[in-house]
Image (cartoon, rainbow, N blue to C red; front, side):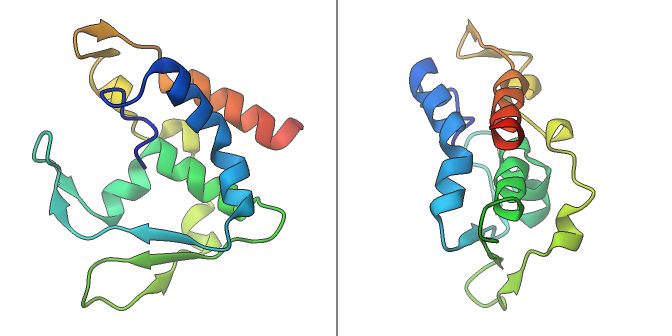
Length: 133
């Protein structure tokens, strides 16, 4: 999910993208999780399905899929030769969205030399809209 990449998005675009996650997922017929094992181009960190599952915004997408009006199936692809599998409710049951990894927190809320707000504040707004509207 690129919604938390402060290097690319301006503040207004970021907020609009974040707020649209529930509506986007609600209109989707499928959430395809592309999570092959690779290295992050920015810092060389290992990226795979486990790292995807730890990311806060990815957890939010998963939560939205499980709470959409019509259950949105989540299919995981780990690579071109790997068999596809369903991301199930059992995988999502104990995942705490707010305890996920957020880029802003990892960089001490300073990105590109600029102070950035914590994504968890935006996450709270999205969660409130998801459950209280």
